Every structure is written in structure tokens, then in C-alpha cells.
Length: 68
Image (tube, rainbow, N blue to C red; front, side, top):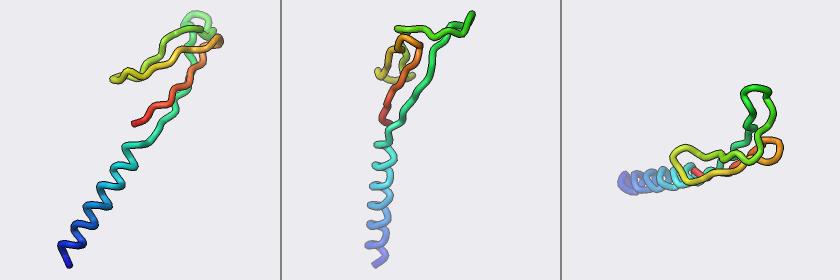
């Protein structure tokens, strides 16, 4: 009976870790010029440590969905 509870608890822990690992994060922001604060179009924005990235629009805005 104790072994059954341990196995079920480990299975539940493993399943909850899988759900946490599949979370998606949406990152939004604006890239601006340091001098006048205007948006910078066409700037490459990358997620550090990955190959995921995005490019800013005409107003310097970007949106990136990343799965962790």
C-alpha cells in the first residue's frame, strides 16, 4: 500500500512538471532611440539563450511568444 502511494505521488509530480515545462510566455515591448525616444523599425529582438526572435514593426513594437 505504501509503495502504491509513493508511485502515485511520483507520477503526479512528473505530470505536474510536464505541465509547467509547456508554459508559453508572451513578451511585448518597444525598441526606442536613446536620443529622442522614437520607435525604431526593423530591429532584431532575440530571446537570450535561444534561437527565437522577432523584428520590430514600423513603430518599434514587437511581440514574441516563447514556450518554456
